Length: 483
Ligand code: SF4
Image (cartoon, rainbow, N blue to C red; front, side):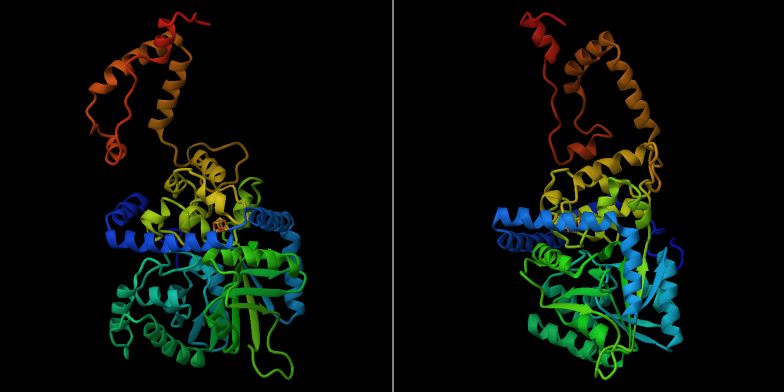
């Protein structure tokens, strides 16, 4: 089990079982297929000009690479700028530390109810559960997050957390869980019901929590991208605003936000711009009529500084959490987000989660990919996802020299290692190799299709057939001399 308040890192996981169950759920697969097809089409329409896409992506990738290259220095600048703007800064190495910081801030002000804007870092922290265990109600105000909170679920997508549910399922859920709700499948009515509940909660909340999309080091500005206005309400109505961010979210200059923002909204939801872009530069000033009295920024590490130490894997930190890699991934679109049993599903989760939780514990995730490259192709900041997946596959079984990857080498299979050693020996002895090839080409067909160990492979595809004669035999028959 996970340590109290320390996110999901210690929970038992069974990716194979969870994905098998997801594949057997036709409704879930229909919901994902429909949603992902729509998102892919909207994104493609907004990046219709390949030249513009290439230019903008190079610009975004360059900004993220430059900022990550100076991460420690920019974080120090950010801290100074935030403090200069009247905000308080808290550093947390682990989710548990971050949870404790938030709890202390709330307790010191006698807070018992908070409203939350969307924050993936708060999911990493398992914040809602932690606060509930300490007698504080945390209500999600993003509509998708609100829906899954009502159903006691985790997000299944980083941008659209309730994408796995269709309209009928949400209608049923609302009629069962919201006191004054009646059953309706009208989307506007359903939204109005959630809005009525959330309005009352915004007015009564003691504090508001939010995520951060970009934090500008030079100006000490927190940028928050959203579509529903709930982010603005969470950060401006209550007297206390606590912003939660991963330490990689820092960018140097305000003008660098514009291209990243454009890449983010177009890649995420196929929107040219989002409905709201909040630029938060401090608490309510002298003579101002609204805004929070206090703003606190909690900056979470949770393995990021370790990832930063590896020159190749540090590219993972460039992610701007757009979700495009998920929408285009043939694995994610079939099994959905919950099967990954992680905060971040899909390709970004398959490279990030093993690095955070340990590559031995989550070694199945880098293998949950066909390596088709669709994720890397659509990534707006050009993260080489397929290369990182291959690197993590190697790290799982072999501790590479000088590696800083958590749990490297701990998923080593003795049987697999023996198999490779035998294979290496066979290749080193041509006579044995020729004999083995001769036997394999003659005997392969005699093996039953459902051979134990091959079943997982042959259940959904035909067993590969060996040629009747090996290439070497055929070449020799043609009279080509052996070299
Ligand atoms: S890895 Fe790239 S495509 Fe995937 S969420 Fe991050 S920025 Fe978006």
